[in-house]
Amino acid sequence: MHRILLLPLSGYINRIQAIASAAILAQQIDAELSICWEMDAVVPVGANSVLSDDFCRRYVLTEDAAIQDFGCTLKSVPKYLNYDEPRERIYLAGNDLGEQHFMPELAQLLGNSGSPKTLIIAAGGKFFMPAANSVEADWQDEFRRRRQDFYRSVSFTPEIEAAVASQLSARGPYLALHLRYTDRSHQTPLDGAIRQALRNLSARSGITDLFIAGDNAAVRQRWTNQALDLGLKPWGVEHLVWDRASGGSQQAALVDWRLLTHAKSMVYFLESSFAVEAAVAGGTFETSIALAASPTKSAFVRGQRYLQAAVTYPKRHGWFNSQ
Image 1 (cartoon, rainbow, N blue to C red):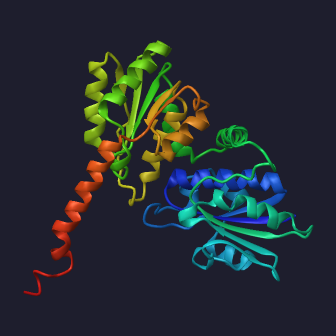
Image 2: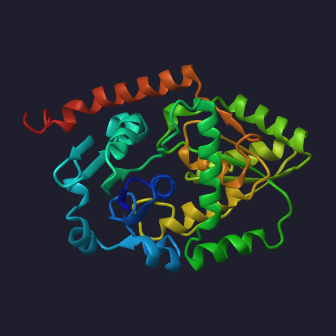
Image 3: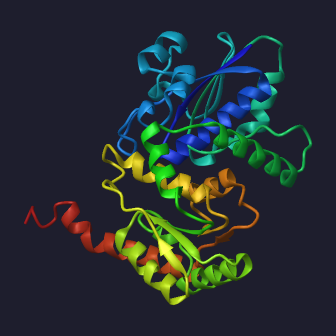
């Protein structure tokens, strides 16, 4: 039997979608899956602060155990796809190319001989090994179905699940709007496109309750006001901790994500994997509205960033301090 060690990267949902991908791959190639969840600045908590005890007991290794069992840490995983033939060991870290880019070559490596191999993956995104000669539209559909099954089978900590249940207890059907401005301001649609999508979704569904999620309080309030102007009934969850670098931020992120998965349909930004995976998990991928970034707005935001960088360059590089 093959073995897979996954070292999930980046934010909470980036890690969850990488875990889903690795679990699906393990099923495909009849492999035993282990996960080494290393903390970092974006995720400053361990797996047991995110995932259920049952899941952690079954799959999660400590860093020491990963070193003992696999002789590997995140820092030792080389870039891209590498094969250590004498040890029958494959390393995959897609980096700027993404893991999906290497799936055809990985399939060849796994199929070259019948001997079991150890596959070590460092990833914060999705990856799937399609059947040979399959059409992309077909395997993408299959991959979404399998991710949905995985997401529905996994529980978060009791505290997260209880917070979600509390919000849903007296709540009827609702739509959702997910806003991602803090680190995606150059990939956001125009306000008019968001308003029109909300009108269309409400008219199509007959639902006026609207859950608004996002990591910026001012933006959430602005869209609460806009939703009221559209005749909708907006609501949200006020969390104690929003800062992603703080312990406890998993509560805000994952309660919101779970609530997005319970929406009947969503409006979200196409570039947000957080929202895309919520739509997949909730089975609303086909009925939700994904909004692409406005090219004009993207160019403006990039221009503003370049200008700011140029203005602050002398100070950041000590020109004024050296005078």
